[in-house]
Length: 526
Image 1 (tube, one colour):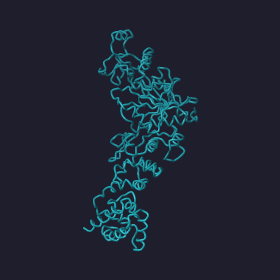
Image 2 (image 1 turned 90 degrees about the vertical axis):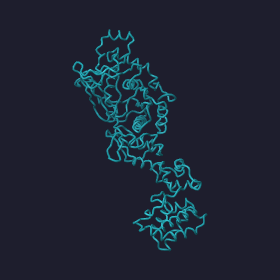
Image 3 (image 1 turned 45 degrees about the vertical axis):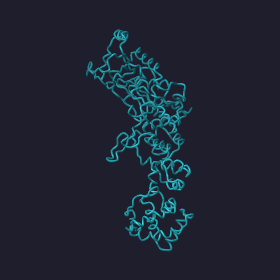
Image 4 (image 1 turned 135 degrees about the vertical axis):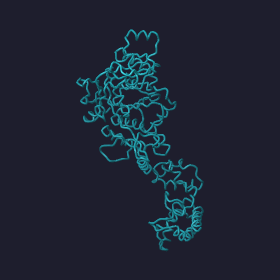
């Protein structure tokens, strides 16, 4: 076990939260209370209500990296209390996603195990009931027998009825509550919020956060069916699982005072809170940013994998969405490097914008670092079914794509011209730099076809084609750029190609290559 290394870091990591009535008490926010000998324990606690989007992945990654950087423990906990939105295969999907991303829990459900299970909330019902009853007995919560459709009464004794419930049952006498309980009336258990003062907690990124208690509703802790709410269950579980640092999205920051009040009601020390700024997407039409969603493109780790971004590249890029190392300008990292460099001090409280171009650059760097053989193997399935002559040439095709690919779903479109020649377009021959036009091409192609046709099939390969053309260019006094441009356009039928003229001709083979050149000449002559 390794301690958090520096006092400065400790001061940032540790805070205390409190209910304040003017913040004069001993329990006001205490940055001076420093973690010194505490084992770091973090958690990722997704709800199985869908698939993991980029924000979820980033949260899990940061929690895992922080635990690993400090020789701590990373917990996977499944928060499945929202049964109405439960997706049957979501838990398996979450686990597969974490595994693909290289994020390995130390404790968690099923075969992962651990000393503080169960790690699925629906398997911990008796635990939540016990602690909810303890709050009722201590006067920090009460049974509410109101029908859930009850409308708010506006003001109650001069206090705003916040959140749609006027706190009707809060005023029930113990005797009346017991009588209704004896009758078998259905109830929920609500938290008894302070009616005055403020609640303050310390967040690593946002500093002291203060919420007036008048803005806090008497939230439901335990539903009529005995199922806990998120705000209740996560506090119980984080305490019992000895979580020291809660890293989660900033959308939970307004709920945190409720959590802090629960910690204080039980007499427990709150963990350290780190609320991450959201990941944003940019509208391509307006340039405006908003929270990342499907209208911005692929937003889940699985979607990005299916598009052919390497898993390690996605993780690398996601790590940089709101974090940067303090000691290097490096942008490409192995997982071990991320672990060694990660600290909470590197986090930003400003929203990060998901940039698909930047992801593509990171992905391209990962492809470049692969061996040619490995890249060919990774890319082959994305190429789809190929004619036999191209399948045989796959290593050569992959060679052309190796340093030009940012995602593997681009492979098939990039080589489509090899499978079927695009429609003729004379304008493609226009190239001001090389002083080439369709007329120039019509003049050059007959001689080039004659030269290339003299090369037998057994010698029809890139290096020999290139050498032959260089010799002819020098002998005839042609401009090299013009020759190669004309040949490439004639052979490929499109302006942008992975590879030059001779590489394309070599892959097509002698018969197909010459046939395409002759067809181009014929079209130019019409």
